[in-house]
Image (cartoon, rainbow, N blue to C red; front, side, top):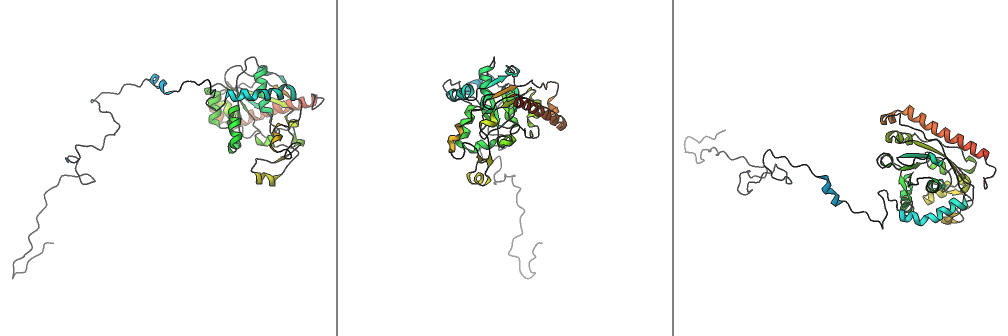
Length: 335
């Protein structure tokens, strides 16, 4: 509202003057046309390369990226999964001693393991420190007509033990994750060994030997269906007696932070040396007929009823074979 002067005296306040229109400015108070900005336009990307209108960038040549890939190092002999052939070769004399002279492993049906392409090997699992995985690995290396590396899927607990995780990783143990299994089976065509019983199998007491635990929720079946790989069941006899468990001590398990605290012929009285004190049980490893899943599609992995049916079929096949093998043997130590 405009002020009005008194009639007796002229007003000393000048009439307000309308301001001149200003050029629109940026948020910081300077217009884009200001000489202080030097014609800078904040809208284009700083990483854009100026090019003529209508010109498209040439397609990249992926062959140029080969220069960024390091050359193979034969001295290192380490693959993408951390498996070191040099470390494995250094442990092989010890594995051969257990395989040939201590456990005297007998192998049947090793020809059922495919010589190429991906395949999922499924086995029973037992023992305080299970020796079945390394013996299956040696059976393929020593008895198969086309031996090749075997990767074992293990639980994540070993990641919590720095020394153990480094060693088992270099021997071929890979964290059990669907993405890892898919890459090994489908993309790289590798042999993969899995123990569906998991820790439930390795912590079984002696009187529970050769009674298979539940095979989880059939995750190994979904993995095989998505990858289109066959399943090769394996029955192993001898691991239950090689490193038996007579009892568990839950209190010491919590105090030590171990996944379980077993009591057997060597632990805890011999401490870490118990890892090498296996009983000389006679081992028998039987590779059974592969289960071909090529008739199914990858989307069938979402069919829970189908997955459970195949999982129960594999479990039943292994259990029946274990019953037959334990009934036929005459001695735990001599077979």
